[in-house]
Image 1 (cartoon, rainbow, N blue to C red):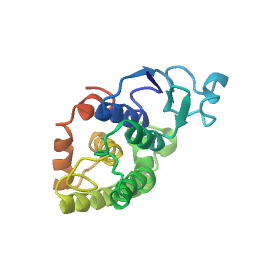
Image 2 (image 1 turned 120 degrees about the horizontal axis):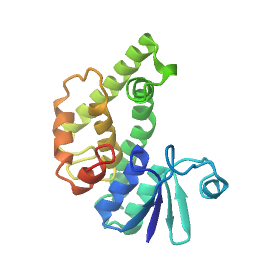
Image 3 (image 1 turned 90 degrees about the vertical axis):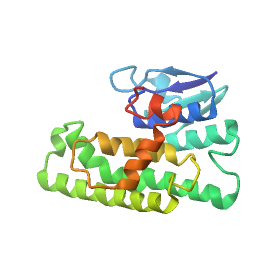
Image 4 (image 1 turned 90 degrees about the horizontal axis):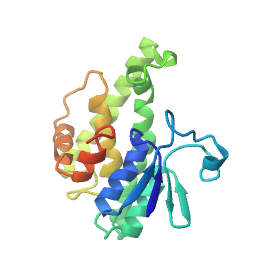
Length: 207
């Protein structure tokens, strides 16, 4: 059985759990990360030298980096509907997965650390305001894309890209800041609630 190492509250672990639900593969999850078993032990570092979750073990195959993991799971266990085989369709999915991991992720970092984690090192009011503006700017990009597709981030059908993007949308709405009106994002958020995997793992690790 697939072994998933990481705590369920981690957004990156939840990518993996949601993907498992979409491709309908059983797994066993072990609690690793802050508040649980330390990822800085020799045991864990032997699996991931970066000492970060998630990590999966699929028989004798070990893999870390959440986006690499979800691509692997969708490729090995999926039917092609989540992660297309055709080059252009796959590239479109990859484009949005990579955008979430780079541009969108960076835009929310300071605001999330300040407003949710209450980090003392992230309480500069000017930096916070700038971060909130940047986050909103990136959400506007997503809103325009969703207006264009009318459904999901890479097109009319749900794809692997919607897993990291959907979790990012959850983080946006759950963070206590002023949220500009992005109707397409709101509709998308409601649409995701019809998916069992999202209901299980998309809302901060709780059903």
